[in-house]
Length: 378
Image (cartoon, rainbow, N blue to C red; front, top):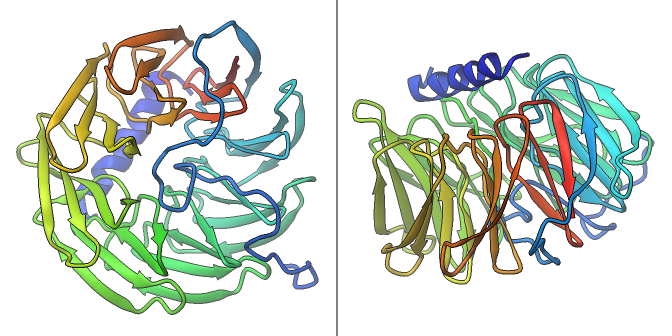
């Protein structure tokens, strides 16, 4: 798939959003069983990686070529890197060498970033299925069918997998068996990833509503209605929620800061273009990329701008933060590393296409591109 075609596919998905348009013998998978990795670095989706960063790029450790765009954020667990591609495969490669360990073919494009927990990899497909695969072998453990594409990334907590679908439902599925625990109907597309904190799950819908649900039962706790369409999933930090909406008529983007207890809107920050980049939070600053090509940094307490960093292309992917450096990619084909405090560029790396959302682990940065390559930089 060409870069232009891949870009158009994502744009069509965005337009859909804005229009509102088994194996039971597997061992139990307790939430504490082994390391976890998921989109946004944690269940709160803050994008903060508690690991050694990449202060300088010494070179490419390895490249892994897939058939099409690597849009997903990699998940790194137990010396393996898991990621999906537009070629419909979920891949596992060795973190040290980039050698392929296994691949699993789904029925369509993979946009959903994988989550790894308890020895299983969970990923949603545009074919509408949530898959659970053995992390070591890639063998399918179960699949759960929804009635729409899954583009957001699963959250895994206490033996349950939570994921939204374009059919408008948020699903809770038993991580061991693949059997449904509960589902919640929003009535509109859920295109982005849920976040969890303090026994509450937060998710947004194309109807412009942020929902707070009891994580165990799926019962609605409260909701916040906006007059726009949500363009990212929520991020949770110290009792506050942050998410983006857009006004389709004006094409402007709005960042909301909401108190999770009082449900009050604390402040808003507007950008001249839409924002589909899930924000990252570190050191009392929230960072995100925009379709206007800028990376923004805003004070989370006041909503006042700290700085912005320009690129020459739209920014779709979510930034990652590690070692006080913000890493993010642009469709100008560069991966950037920017000082989190000053917004000054530390380095940049040229890929062969538009750059997706990076992940950081033990001094290595992993990122995909629409040239079909997953890069490991050290």
